[in-house]
Amino acid sequence: MGKNYVDIENDQGEALRYRKHVNGRGLVAHGAKVHATARVETGAYVEPGAHVGPGAHIGTGAWIEADAVIGPEADIQAHAHIGTGAAVGAKAKIGVRTHVGEHAIVQAGSLIGDDVTIADGEHVATDRRGLWLAA
Image (cartoon, rainbow, N blue to C red; front, top):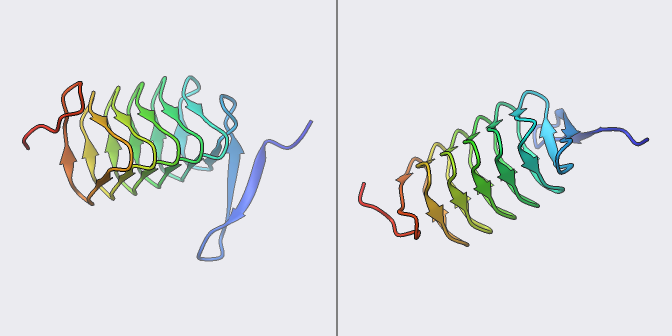
């Protein structure tokens, strides 16, 4: 049986330990909280202090930065990037290669398409079709 963790050095030269999540085998840093029913796909990273709610999906190659919050049943598609301290509400969907900036908020149930950039600190809400609503 292989080991269930990986040690990776960050930009500051510190070693961070990531465990392989039982549901999907993505990497979850020590200090992150990922619900057992969430799925973290291979190649995805969840950084220290991040929280991933029940039933959430983190796609292949996605990156959830430190202190970000992913709500219950949210869907983060492949290669999306959720910035430090950002929040994605329950049942929201973040498209492929989409970048959610630091401390940005995506409201529950929002549908954000592929290749979208949400600025640092921006608050976004959409209807069920993905049309952006006025702030």
